[in-house]
Length: 372
Ligand SMILES: N[C@@H](CCC(=O)N[C@@H](CS)C(=O)NCC(=O)O)C(=O)O
Image (cartoon, rainbow, N blue to C red; front, side, top):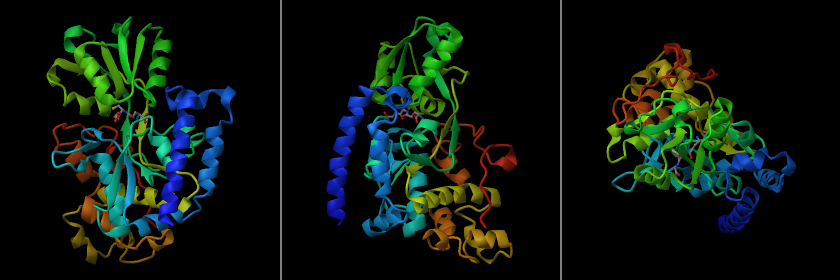
């Protein structure tokens, strides 16, 4: 059964890949999906077919049978998703994948990360090659509709930025008139760049790359004058440059980039699991529950805490999970603050300020609906 599924996935994957290349001519998926002349695209029809194969509950059943969650991730973005010196995947996005494994298997290591380029990621989700995509991916209308995805809660509120060398003397977008600007294909970045520069009436030369390694290489070699992506991506890659201090990220933001996990449409149970595991991480910070102190909460009298940790009620079983799923997640992976600090904040080389990514009680945008 599993073998047949895999075979079908491979066949479908090849088909989608060829179709995607044909439709997009190797450009961004936004280009393909916003072209009204192609509506409805074959991609849309096939996406629906894949989704209908995915009746509610089938993803969890397949994950349980397999014994691990297959997460589509990034391997080139320190802090978010990358391979560390020991050959293991590490990062903020990876931890949200581990949280799913902790909730289902009580084992955060029960995941397999499939490294995917920006271009490959949605095909991998549509064909069933991965269970969930957690790869600095922005929630947009076309992805939610034509690409057949359902986005879970935003885990990182970001915006697109621009990196230049300090030596260039460039301090604002206006200074980039006539510049060669590097951008990665298959991202929201390409369209935002075009939109913003059109709005500002700035002429520029867009240079497109297939992955961030080749883009950063070209920037360091001076083949492009500037490069643009999510500010988090710029911060992450700045740390890998030969002379990080020789570069600056312009203060202007070109767009809103809400990043979060996303699943295929058609399996509401799995969508709920991804949503509520993510919310558990946010809620735990609000409740002051950490991986260190969680056991002290097990005799709490607070009904909110008791329901959250599964001491009372049956919230987990309503979505096919054990009732203590939130306990498992926080015990093994930690709450939002712990995950953030470890990968991006005070305990990391990036020391990135949380900005919008603070809990609503501290004036930020992170907010979990009630666990009841
Ligand atoms: N958030 C944007 C951009 C995501 C993206 O793919 N960013 C690039 C630039 S940092 C990246 O992660 N590249 C890594 C790679 O090519 O593997 C999106 O969803 O389209």
